[in-house]
Image 1 (cartoon, rainbow, N blue to C red):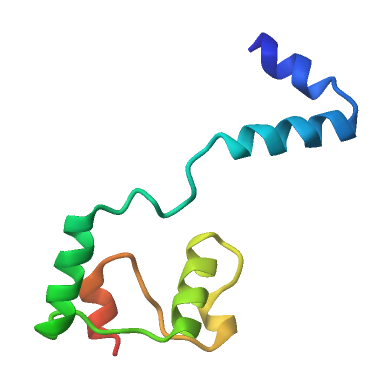
Image 2 (image 1 turned 45 degrees about the horizontal axis):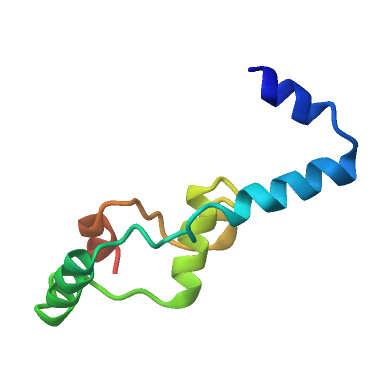
Length: 90
């Protein structure tokens, strides 16, 4: 892609500025969750169909999913994106 090559040829500070401007045009992460999904999750929590996890468990889960840490190294149980797996591990 021609524009990509031109951007990569820019000096570091210009590339950083361009990246910052491009990132500002994207919606914040996590804003793609619908009100319906939030309501469904709340119902599941109220009906005990889903287990709550601590903030620490959540952070470790996200870091593991991003490949930043190993759950074994962190001393945390294995978790998956499947809510039922999360429920069964608690």
